[in-house]
Amino acid sequence: TKQDAVSIPGILVSDAPRFPHRAFMMDIARNFQGKKEILKVIDMISFYKLNVLHLHLNDDEGWRIEIPGLPELTEVGSKRGHTITERENLIPSYGSGPTVNANSGSGFLTRADYLEILKYATQRHVEVIPEFETPGHARAAIKSMNARYDKLLKAGDKVGAEQYLLRDLADASVYRSIQGWNDNVINPALPSVYKFIEKLTDEMLAVYKEAGAPLNTIHFGGDEVPAGVWEKSPAVANLLKSDASVTSVDELWNYYFKNVNRILKARNLYLSGWEEIGLKKALVNGQKQMVLDTRFAGENFHANVWNNLSPNEDLAYKLANAGYKVILTNVTNLYIDLSYNKNFEEPGQYWGGYVDIDKPFRFNPYKLEQPTNKEALTEKGKLNIVGLQAPLWSEIITTEGQLEYLMLPKLLGLAERSWAPTPDWANITDAKKA
Image (spheres, one colour):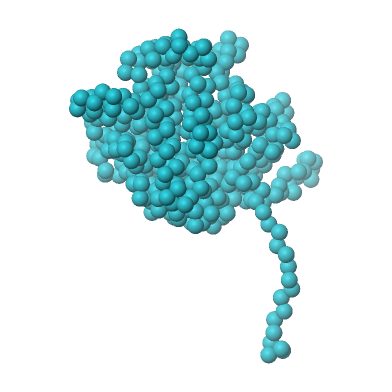
């Protein structure tokens, strides 16, 4: 009846995200999480209006996705357990123990799994960005291709054996990565390396097309390549003689990503990577350091910048001001695999501090906490801050429960800061009012 009618006034809701890239990164390489948990994560992040799931698919300790035509990647690289030669599986890591397939140290996504994940994510307006960590952090891929080389060479197929080889067999370089590996870096002087990159890229394009899912970029890593790599490689020595654009071993960094970028651009994709894709080695006060490299600044490179620890508090702003697209991934506020606090029984890492519920909420993308003598964000640079990302690395995460405990409710702060406008408190300069 008219007497019981309820009148609701008309309103216009105007709402839009602050950043186009609102991401959660899930590391399934160190310890594996399967399709079921990934689908659950997609539900969680889409509920809070995050629109990107960055999947870290390989690392030194595991390769986690099936690539048609390269079965060794999963036959060898997806398994950890007791081994002498690493021709059947990788050695144990992170307490995975001697038995293969006994726990989260082993496992991979089949192509059918990944296809289902892509369809599920697309229905929920989540873009899945695949990451293949190169040239460092690539031990699982290297060992897998070593096994392929041995198998095909034994069968008399030398050409096939060398087709996707990732290391110079005669390389006598001595190095040690920050995680302690001395055999985890791909050799960029080998043409077979770029055949491998092309293979990965084309297989990703095929599965995304079949799923009807968008693929605009592939993340090719780029972080933590140790000093000493490639210095005693005959393949590198030959490249230095034959290619005038490569004047030193340090220039191989630029050479590698120039070639990877060429492969991606030919397929209408842009390159994503960690912050080092915008840096180079140079002598500073007689010591080699990573400094800004502007050569790729106009190439639409998207850099995840995690290092805002001293003295790199302004690194993200330097890259953005120079022209790189930057996804703020600051360790001090957004690394949600860090422990909530100092309590001995709290799970999580602590090398970069502690990230509790408040740290992501307190994050101010356009005014990072940094000393006054650091580079400020320019108006041009501000336009290059394209989003925020919270990574969850899995070195010590072996169960779904551990993952979700560290993920939520921390992720709510990231969702708020990446969607909502700058909060009023962030513009207060008067300490008394603050």
